[in-house]
Length: 198
Image (cartoon, rainbow, N blue to C red; front, side, top):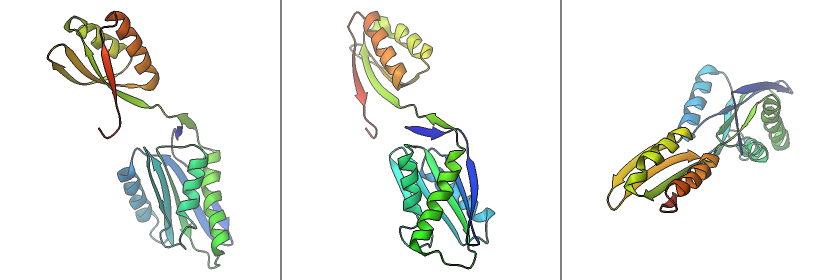
């Protein structure tokens, strides 16, 4: 999976209609909706502000008054085809007086996003993992030091029969953390992966 380093836009003209396509990194739906609202404010004379979103398993495809399935869905398909996540695609359309028909609209919206993506810098998406780790009291400082070295976050700590640390690390770092922790604790560590939404 990939995201984008920064926003990129392109402009396409089809039979006097202008399509301003933009792709940009966004973390979630709320941010995407704020961005779309800002575009509407920037382009008060535009006929449509259509958009598509893929972010953290959430998706959206909005036709904004265009015939159903001719704008948002084709834009979303482009994002999926490019294996993108955390990306918002928007197209601001200024109507040029000539109707394009369903096929023409699908092509125009698809092309506007595809052209913008040609100039976009794709970056790999790092998957984060959250782990509950149970270990002996004597190893708490070792685990904390290791977590810091690997750039992870300590989410919570609790003490009972031993120490329970809730940590969050990037995928690769999580593997390294668990391996080194097993070695430091001589195998006396148990851990459980937390699924999203738990």
